[in-house]
Image (cartoon, rainbow over all chains, first blue to last red; front, side, top):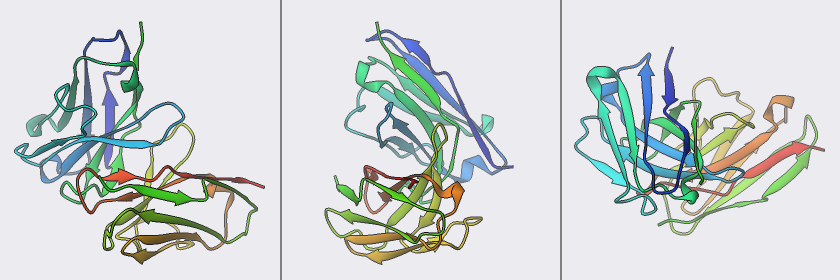
Length: 120
Length: 107
């Protein structure tokens, strides 16, 4: 069964760091681009970052550039998002998603999400 | 970045109604338009991709149309499980961008 499971969310103070993980199963992880998307409470969807299947191509939204780092370990079927210098406006549910569109954003499989709360 | 707008922002409908949601892009995106359904507390689910292609497993009452800047999602006969928020998204250029959503609730 094709599945993505996020973990690592929690409560962190402004300026703090957090590392999110996304475990993939049921498909050949190394064949697919992967993305992170977030959704602030009661708000819409915001794409955050994507990484190519090999990890050689990476893009970030302007809102997180320089603070967040996406990475992947194909041997472990895992995707990561290192979040530094966190701000209140980063508070959101973070979803990982499989990108069937090779970076274009055709997001056909989503995880259940992990909540990140940035507050003092 | 390409801006996406949707109308209406919300609508009330009854089971069996035909529902139409529109999405507009700030520039031409050819057919690189996807539709997602999201229920409260759940992850979004891909319904339609490339403007009019039905994702595997999605009921045929869902359909999409359009190209260029104007797109439509139609639910031919609304079912109880269809009450949700619907988002359009362009995958024409990076960053991909989502519309603000259309909430469909029960009349």
